[in-house]
Amino acid sequence: MDIFCYLLGRLNRDTVDMIQLIKELDIQRAVALLITGSALTGEMGKMVVTIMSPVEQAERCRLLASTNETSQKAKLKGISFGRRHSVNRNTVPEHHLKGYGAMEFARQLTLLVPRVIKILLKALLYRYYH
Image (cartoon, rainbow, N blue to C red; front, side):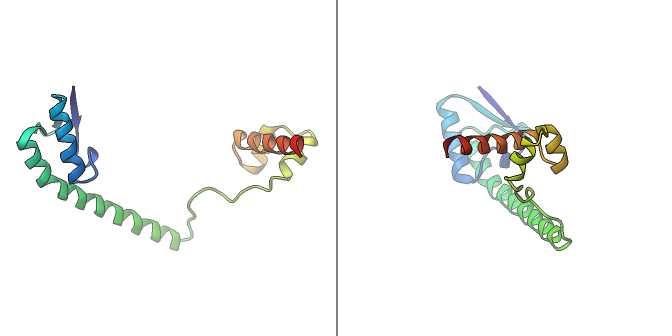
């Protein structure tokens, strides 16, 4: 079995994980190759990993810091993250009883149809068991 990896950081989380992976690959007689052609097996592979892992970890930290900085700037501009606040769950069954279909109601509330159906099913189950 051969494993091809573009970046070392995509193959592991830290140096200890990578060295453990190399040991497992040695046991299974598998070869992990970087896109540069370097083999990550045996003592030479451990040396490459020991040298490259801190570099990859620093790159990961830099990327995370950049992402957080961008998120903070967006929040200051008023851009919201995550999904919208929940819908009033009582209105969905009421509109359904008036004859509105799930698709029509989903369009009115700009929701996905499966979300409306899920709310309807929960309301029906609640009424059935209570």
